[in-house]
Length: 253
Ligand code: A2H
Figure (cartoon, protein in one colour):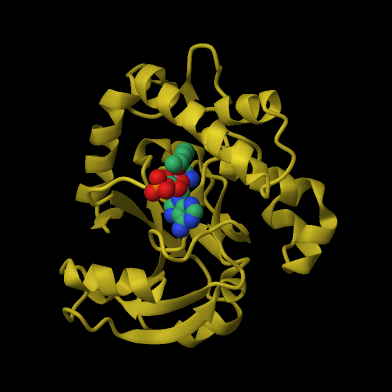
């Protein structure tokens, strides 16, 4: 944990349908899941979205008549950062669990798939970010391992009512070349360290450290409008593009 505040980019992942309990939001405006990331330049590699199945979430009144889904804690922080209509009093339209969100189809900025799905990640912390994470298995060891767990374990899919078609068609998308690690750095590091599941938290922390530092300092984008540029140069540009297009917002805690 660092000392100063952490600034996240919140990626607005739009619900394309409102299945199950979410149908109560019909007619309330566009509905977005807000995914907190430190790596806005990696959105070209998104394959799904993660929530904690037993986590508590809410659908809150956001700006411009939109509905934003995140934890209560994040909604309160957003309201004090002048990013909801009423300072200090985020309006909760609907209480949800992570399980209620699983299977929701989403459209996300810079994502090559027109729709990706909300899936369960068991290591999400609800006291960090928004409790919603966008999944980039090419560059995040957590995301890679959790996606492989779901692909390899039909029982795990069954337990969280995850349909095969929300997982099996989605492959790792190479987006960044890291000298020495290649274009699927998360996979390489997870294999090198022999990480066997998302619960292998000690090794995953080591893997994250390795890929994260190397990716930022030596990585080169191989997709998108900044292809050929270093990650460290592309990152602020891509972040600014999404912010000014209204596809993302800033959040700190
Ligand atoms: B990152 P830090 Cl490609 N619980 O985004 C668990 N993990 C969370 C979270 C939560 N509540 N909120 C955000 N995160 C994840 C992309 C990414 C991320 C890549 C590579 C590394 C990476 C795609 N997922 O993070 O503890 C989010 O995943 C490695 C550090 O605040 C967010 O950025 O340092 C990162 O962890 C924030 O972690």
